[in-house]
Amino acid sequence: ESNEAESSAPETDSVQWVLGAGTPGWRKGTDRLAAVAHALQRVSSPAQVGWVGGRPTGADASAVGRTDLVNWIPESADPWKLLSHAAVFVLPSREDPLPLVALEAGLYRRAVVAMPTGGLPDLLADGRGLVGSRQDVRWFVAAVEQVLASRALAEDLGQRLHEFVRTHHDVDVIAPRWLRAVSDAAGR
Image (cartoon, rainbow, N blue to C red; front, side, top):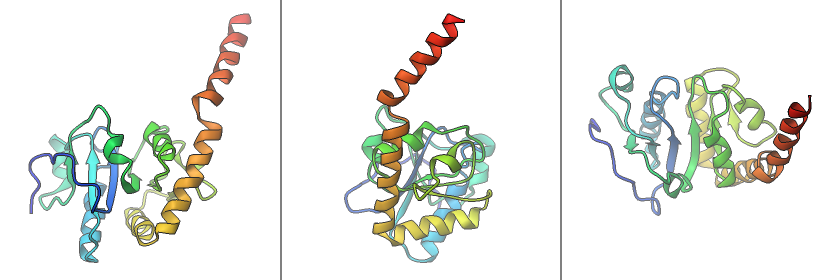
């Protein structure tokens, strides 16, 4: 089964979605989504796996493989129309300093499962999300399955992340700090 063309925006009301977003490729770990999709298929999960931002190309497309069960959704001016419906928001990145999409997921109270890269371990600490201790695809798949199996866990993770993002990363919190830092630097 091959998903050669990009999917259009999928149905969100009747489907449990595992979604990620960004420019597809090795750095973002989009090839790892195939492992999640295959694992969910093996356990007959009705959940669907998707990536908003287009389909990988070149060598990155080869890494996804021929039996691609991932729904590749084109870039969108407002990806959160779809992403806000995710049962689980995934960040399979191999390297990413601090994906803004993780902060946005918090604003939408989405449960996040992530690989340990950049600032994600700190952002998702203390029950604000699930983040691996190393780049382990088996752990990643199991964590996605764990969140899908428990709506209460998904809601708790999403709420905790939301509260943290609002109190530590919101523009109303960050802007005054930046203004002070710029003013201090200009005064030197």
